[in-house]
Length: 64
Image 1 (cartoon, rainbow, N blue to C red):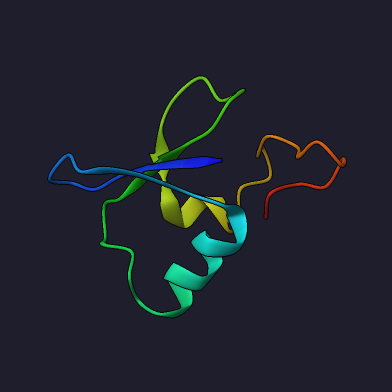
Image 2: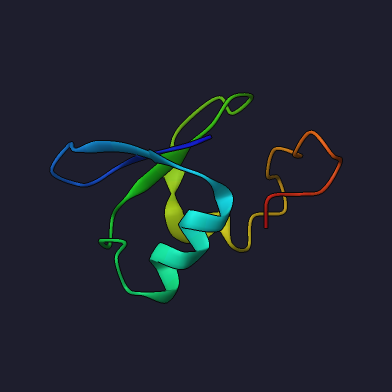
């Protein structure tokens, strides 16, 4: 599960597939942060899609 926080502080959760869908539909507000288990800090959602330091998924695939 991926946790999101908008610049206004609203927090939601979504799956990786939902995050890609939200991005494709323009539903992610600039400045939104993401976090999931294993990460030491929140990161801008844009880095989720190109983050080479991303936390691996359980099946061994990277989240990007």
